Image (tube, rainbow, N blue to C red; front, side):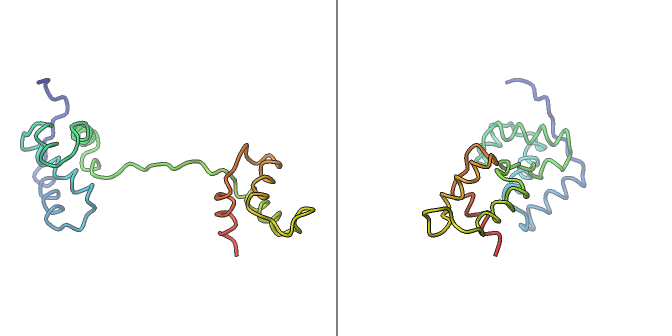
Length: 142
C-alpha cells in the first residue's frame, strides 16, 4: 500500500467542531459524511476502510483528505457548481418579449413558441434555441 501523501491531523478544536456537527445533526448529509471521513482519517483508518464504512468511493475519501490538508475545515463545504451558460442575454430576452407582443406573422393567428424560437434564430441571437427556453423567458414576465 502506498504511503499517504495527505495526512489528516485534527487539532482539538477541529475535532470538537466535527463531533459537535455530527451530534447536532442540523447539517446537510454530504457535509456530515465529509466530517465523518475526516474523523475516521484522523483516527488512522485507511481510505478503503473509510469508504466501506461510509459507503462512498475511495477517490472521494482521498479528495476530501487532500482538500482538508489544503483548506482545513473548508473541505467540508461544497465547491460551487456552475450551470450552463444562458442562451439569451437580458437585452435579447427583452427583444424576444417585445417581438411576442407584436402582431403575429402573416398567416398565423398568434405567436407560438416554435415561431418565436425560429425568430430568435433568424435574428441571430443564438444558433439554435429550444421552445422550452423561449417559454421560460416569457414566463418570467407577466
